[in-house]
Length: 386
Ligand SMILES: Cc1ncc(COP(=O)(O)O)c(C=O)c1O
Image (cartoon, rainbow, N blue to C red; front, side, top):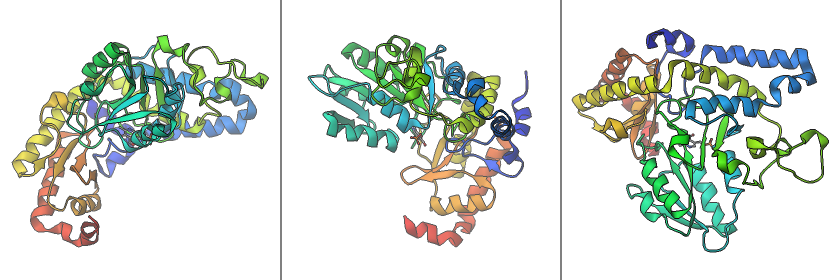
């Protein structure tokens, strides 16, 4: 078995930076450049023939690779531009009328998810927002149609108790739509075992796949039953017949829209290959150990840990509040340590399977130095904005 440290060569940016921003933009695998070149070569030399030689089916073939990472059977996962589109396709399968027209969602959902579901109030949906720290499951009843929730919350990196939500939703006859963007590739996820109706995510973060490669899983028993209104010619049974009326394709293809984002799908598979090669269980083991180490280093330095302390509830990201964290973040970037921050939770540090313990020690040492010497003060313009 290849040592985790041996994978560092696969990520060129690690030679110059301490890369702790994998919860936002995962490090680019070296091979992604090669894949994009393959795409260009195919376009250049095969021209129109490329569609029949793989391009047309990529939303399904690449979707099956995602399926292997999230525990979905072949033929249930399709590729889309982003989570917003994937969730919009799910929404387009439902009408909000009669007794069952509630959408129960948690306040901690990512904004684009929230905006989309809030907008359903205009289509007859009744929106119930569950405040942070209150259990979503208690708000689900027989009037509930959809329950869009997040596996790992983006602000704090906290893992949600999805099993309990699914159990309640099933008892009430509601559908859970799981946003697994912050878990796929770092926290083991088995959508089949969880029994969620839908799951969505993207590739920008822990999957190290870059932008433009969102995904949608639909539970096998629902695939043939649903008729998405947001569908394009790729969703038709005979797309090249250009028929005037829609007849849905068999299987997950019915959830497709128009022309796929081919270059993004080429680029993304380089990351998926590495995630599959290492295995999410192994990634999680490394992540739990490293986020624990980070938590200890942060405690010892006297800063406030704002995310979960319990490793079982902590995703791949550790959040820490330091004085003037916006300016500290800017100074860290000047020192080639890349992370980000959120106003409510402070700095977000997201190591991945290629991160070394020494990099974590170095980062906390630098934070201590920046705060104790006042080095952040030269970024006073950033501080003034918040
Ligand atoms: C949990 C979660 N969902 C969704 C998104 C992004 O949504 P979209 O793909 O629509 O940009 C993010 C981050 O960018 C996220 O952290």
